Length: 516
Image (cartoon, rainbow, N blue to C red; front, side, top):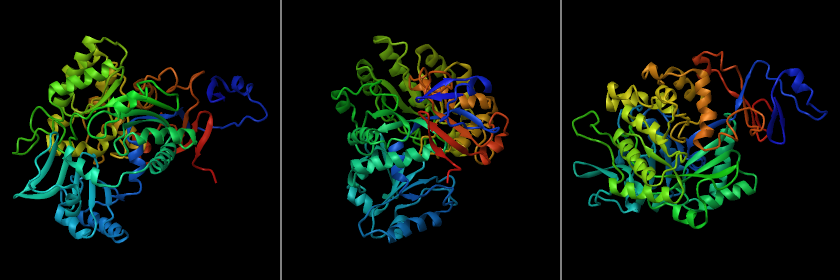
């Protein structure tokens, strides 16, 4: 393959391509390794990923016990000034030794002089200590907010907040300024390059810094500090919604260039399955009759979707539970019936527990799933524990979507999961969780199809399939070079013994694992 001026110039035999080389041409011999189009993580949170890289690491791979988690928080508190926030993210109660969420009183003991905000891996459940709740103005008399849960036990706050209930806590915390957001964009983007990821979708721009995130992205772009191509999904609901400001500034879907482009608008319809907040039509296991959290009444969602559709936006809305997916498809259908647009490509982010009827209507309506197969690897066993095997094993049905022509991309939802592509690829090929549970082998795909999801279908999900996602003449010269030939490797070799050796963006080497 020959690359020139940031594009693929030609592909062919060694002899044909060698004839195009000049005296200053750099020649890279793969020596048996595999080059693919640069990977496209079609759903992650770039700003949040960069910010939490400075937080307490509460992931199960780092701390697997409650005591270990509390010790990590205590160490950070000891390094912090009294009153300074201690922020942590990544715990999963199903992987802790105690098999439960930490409690407010436990965080109080770990950090008696600091407010603590501990976020579950999914991002939809948070635990606060007493100081954080006090600063947020939340006490036993605080009413339950729409689309949120403040947990009580024996009349006392446990510290657990879910969904919209955490809004007052976010409001009480210091907000990152533009310079901090640019730093986060650059830090996270360089991490993605080291994994062969050259494109991503930031799935909720405005969620942490409001409209300032738009300024930060453009500043990063101007100053050469935007490492990866980024498709911006604008936060459309909640107190941080930035769509009105974006619309006034003329920032609608498609605005921008190949490096930074406005994509869709994001609405949250429910929470996470592992956190028991994804909105289901039948209850979770247990005797509490819990169905999850419904964020919007039907009429309110229908009106918002119609309004955004009329304004020309593509939508990419969060819906995991089958009830939330039903509500979203219905709202999309209503908008498309009034204002037909066969290529708007409205998306269902996650789309975890969809049904055969949902799939039929998605095909008919040109509505596309945007799943994260890393969830199968990281959370499959948690799904079984809260929903049972009958409902969980067939979740995120990648093979079915492929066969229906729905062109599913894949992603990590980082920092929910690690952006590392190899567990994601392994899960697509084997449907195995981290514990080895097979989540319905009928939904396995080939390694070629898995790579297609990571490249070509990622580009399609962003309406950029004629620009990137393939290594053919005229396309952007974004390339990932891996340490082995993934097409002949075993799934275990892909998971445990593969790395990204080199990443090329716009025809330039931007990461080299072996560089000195």
